[in-house]
Image (tube, rainbow, N blue to C red; front, side, top):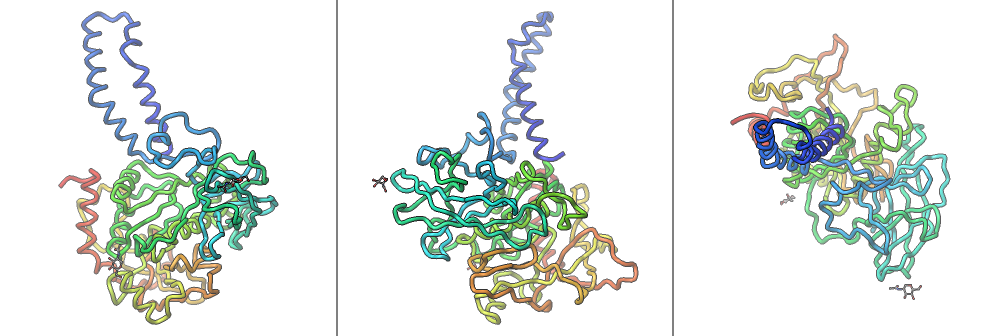
Length: 476
Ligand SMILES: *[C@@H]1O[C@H](CO)[C@@H](O)[C@H](O)[C@H]1NC(C)=O
Ligand SMILES: *[C@@H]1O[C@H](CO)[C@@H](O)[C@H](O)[C@H]1NC(C)=O
């Protein structure tokens, strides 16, 4: 069962619990003794079980619906320190705010310092054939609302789906000092604003909290607890401080793991509710996987991540959870990037060759962990044979890049950068990507034994076991 459903079930449970209060039971004509026992049971429930369920619900990940009527009371309202209204209009922090009656959905808005001090870029998903007279409505210091025309640019990697990734940009006028919130609208009338979004990246901090942020887009129907933990712990060993996950749905067990990492400050979850508004495709080929938007909206999510971490992280890695970029001569990304920038300078991003390690190959039992057996997922340490790379077909490379260089990111690389430099392909003797997955390959394939990952095993195994324990999946 997946979280979205689970939340609903839990709320039902809660509702039932509040309905079955003693007064409703009085109505039945039970003998006194059983009434007493029943009362006792209810009392126990209220004292012990109910708080537990409540607690579980409070740590349960929410999927706020950012448009349409606000949720009545529960969730959203509970923890929201930022102002709920600015310039007398409600603030909406979640991704996907609809632009009027148009088929444009704004994910988030950012000050874009790379174009001088007065430009805002909103990352959005827009219907490519719909022409919208976009405006930026800004809430300025002193509570005045200022309006300017905005323009949009659709990224070229829309794969012919109706919707594409859009950057909606505007300059704000000098009469608007320090805007803090913006609304993308289809008219310059203040009445057209349904909500304001905070403008992120308002100031460039003196130092960034993170060296490396991994952007994972999009997690849906995910249930491989062991793999998510192995990925997180490998990222840590590589020198990553933050993983941003655009999450659409996952199993309750995965949710428990993610909550654990969120609490530690290692993971940020960005609710990805795009399926509620747009028919997303399960793939990238429109004829094979019909829909209105490429693969769950992976591309707009990646681009949002680049902006979101632009001034928080020195580098971002745009990749999936089943992929690990491993340096071959040093241990961490920190050392690797130093090595690469020494060779190629700091004005470029780096792309890493995809190498597939099929789970259909023979498992190596050296690092098999008996205590992990019951956990859903596959121990990647058991798969050390890779399919040779075919130099004649496109390689599904992934990148690590300084996000401030990126104008447009795509799944395998960058479309536009501030300086026009494309990414440098890193020699596979320096680093390459280890991509473990379920995949069939021709029976005459000569797999290549590659045990680089195993050199992390002695650190990885205890780290994974500890998380499994902390989350209550295994006993000590
Ligand atoms: C707000 O707008 C009014 C009318 O345009 C103007 O007189 C006032 O100076 C503005 N306030 C600020 C703080 O900009
Ligand atoms: C980032 O890397 C540097 C080494 O280049 C290290 O000294 C520093 O502690 C790292 N920052 C974080 C937040 O881990």
